[in-house]
Image 1 (cartoon, helix red, strand yellow):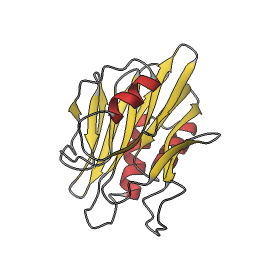
Image 2 (tube, rainbow, N blue to C red):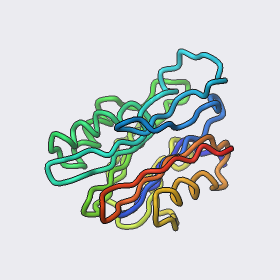
Image 3 (cartoon, helix red, strand yellow):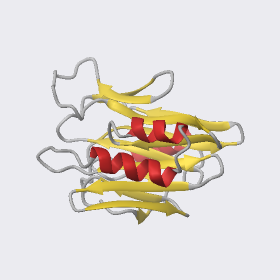
Length: 196
């Protein structure tokens, strides 16, 4: 099954995977304050605005660190609102609504999730027909296609590296790269899985 890009989030761990038929020549790189999806050195040039973006950021909020991750440029305004003290629910809802679903041939939904230092996790999506933001008590998945409403999902990973590897290896078609994040006693850890 091809579900496109997806996030999985639980109270302590989360992951984001790029799955792509159209732009498979991408990888995630670590920058100073973000994990960024972008083209590989051998990727053909494109002017598609949805190919490169920060997919995961850990930010300092008035109540401690929070991780925000998702499938596009909405990750930055979510992170910025969290830094300003917005509740995660509001940061997700306002940013997803403001940027709306992607205006491509497939009306691709935007998906995102947050985990805070206390273990509160939320997941959200904006589709052509809905805006959904939910608090999650167990690992939950939302994808851009086929599984575009949040649903319980059996993520077993207990660390960032394990989460990135686990979602990368899932049976869903056209895996490209993945990022993992986990809450630890010392803050958040992140990891990257770019396959071969």
